[in-house]
Image (cartoon, rainbow, N blue to C red; front, side, top):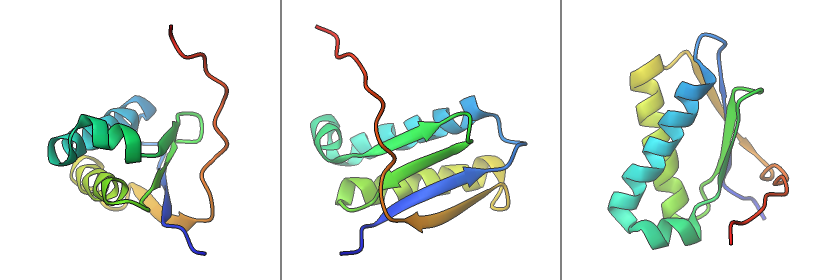
Length: 101
């Protein structure tokens, strides 16, 4: 079964904090379309500052809209030649995180 997972890689000219901000803006814009709870339930994405990359699972309507928003925002902010997008087989393994009580 083929999954719709996309990996975005950015050139060194794009600051990692800007990439992360653009991803969060795409998520926020998607919340405007689908609602916060729907995004919380259906969105799957991650960001790696050291690798200057992010991965988005586009296997749901929410995920597809995050990809669309992120691609559009990144193209306008950094230029279409500043990043690449490719389909990958799986999401990166999540790091263990504590959930606040």
